[in-house]
Length: 388
Ligand SMILES: NC(=O)c1ccc[n+]([C@@H]2O[C@H](COP(=O)([O-])OP(=O)(O)OC[C@H]3O[C@@H](n4cnc5c(N)ncnc54)[C@H](O)[C@@H]3O)[C@@H](O)[C@H]2O)c1
Image 1 (cartoon, rainbow, N blue to C red):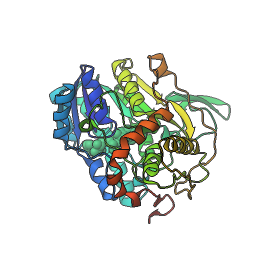
Image 2 (image 1 turned 90 degrees about the horizontal axis):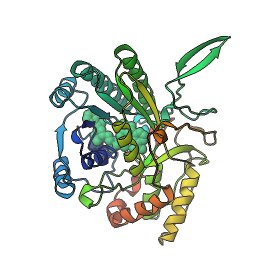
Image 3 (image 1 turned 180 degrees about the vertical axis):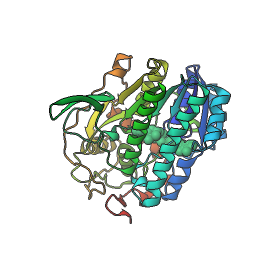
């Protein structure tokens, strides 16, 4: 299969390129290196130093014998995106190329606007490019479980749901109630893709993925092949952030009561799931929603796990709940339906507790590099006020 990955330089894009290349697929990638720059903008950097894209691609060739064709390009540039798709005519396009930080989108009006313009324009450009080149191309779009929010009912794995309003029944898009401008941009992407499927019959897998954590996949067998790893308050997801806090001797900082519960998935299992979805596309003209999660845990439970594993490795780890900078429920019901991936053969291999041990071991050699970013871990981006 020929696969174009938009956002190939990112946390998920790079390991997916290695996985698909190893499985014999042809890989083409696009990235404008936006995340590298935006992480530096908030005074942080990837825990693992990142080689330039061209050096990474050379390492993939040398170490794994994987060929990657790379374009340094902005997906917001419609003509450029169209040209790349027209030139390579991929069977599938994975769309990761979005601003993916909730806190970044909440900093101020400029960051909110950037998030909407980048995310919504990139998806619209993709829709129009494939319409012109070949409407049968399978689009694998990365959404987020955060689109649903934390409702007091089960989150079904379905694009539509039947409702009855004042005695009349109809089907409506499954309700979404996001919790940041970033998450709303993903909701609007979802509606735009559903609409493109309705009008033009495009073939789409819209993945609602939970937070991803981890440093390893089967292909990351050398320091030169590492994927980026963010841990600061703006860019780091909770597990990654706690691990760096543990290494630096900082208290782990669950926000508020810590009962916020989500469906987490390891980097390795995310790669397995994405590969399965690419290799088992939906029927032509279908819009398929997939809930991509594994373990359902609260942020307090995760802090306890990091403390236990960290202490077993000789680290001194404390937990200190801090004022929640976000507007979110801190105790709530959470039950997610996830049946499509298991029906296609997805069998998660990683438990968070085991992965935390590997993450701490992998990060430990970078302790002195991480020390430089100690001041950007504590939450400063307040949903109610923006950034202090
Ligand atoms: N990492 C997670 O926990 C997680 C969870 C759920 C959903 N997601 C979604 O998965 C996708 C990938 O996430 P990630 O963690 O790899 O993020 P990332 O920021 O590490 O990767 C995204 C990549 O896209 C690139 N990019 C952004 N805008 C671009 C543009 N206009 N043109 C070209 N390239 C552009 C960035 O430079 C970056 O390399 C995102 O859409 C994110 O919202 C991530």
